[in-house]
Length: 151
Image 1 (cartoon, rainbow, N blue to C red):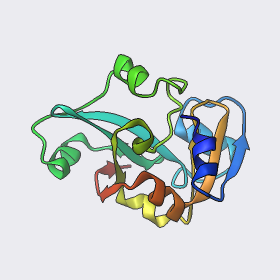
Image 2: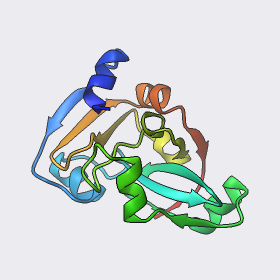
Image 3: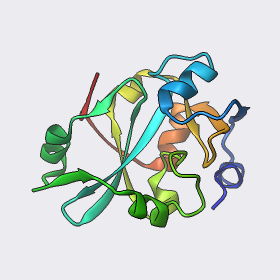
Image 4: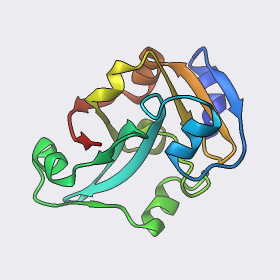
């Protein structure tokens, strides 16, 4: 599904951002002249046999051991590229939006994201992103919230 169409349908007030092609969340933050704490990056993981979309600030990495504890999983690993391509078929690889519900996947959000009033994230391409209130992002993503990030 086109993310921008979904945002329009859901009545979200957002700003569509066009920028040079970026390939990391930190590059997106630099291109938009914002802190890496305001850019949400998605990371797809496999927790035992279930896929989960982790949403965390660009300024953090996932602590897989902590995430394993939070999810009560025996094993947590990053999803491979074929899985990413299958789940996010309409997106450029590496430009997935952090809204798992759009793709039939649960979202878990790093607690530190709640420190931002507004968030920015890619919408399926390496040259477009959206900025929106955190409250709207949370309404759309319906994330579980937990601490699993590290600097």
